[in-house]
Length: 161
Image (cartoon, rainbow, N blue to C red; front, side, top):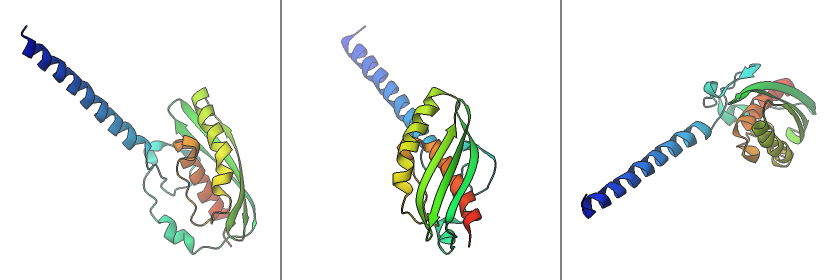
């Protein structure tokens, strides 16, 4: 084999591997970024039902909410099975005063993401308007954050003045 042919094969192999990596990363990023919910209140949610919020935050911004502590739960699908999150959200003057969550998970990877989520959510949510707060990948846990956003929809419904 000529030296030029060997060089061509080496460069071609690197180009193929790099192309595959870029395509894989693009597909992974597309599948795991910008996940929002459909606004439907269902007991079991999965990433395949995630679509843009039809009404958006503008429709919710005009709502008023009663002070109190509200609780809601959802189940959601993760690659290894089904997880659940329950949130107790204290609302005062239309804002989130505090958040406390508890979760049931099926595997150690979920535990890692959920622990990061639970250690960060109160600091992120406290003081935010309930009407417009929409968290974005808290603690790196995109699926748990998405499920929590669905919990907030249930709480908004229950807290309407």
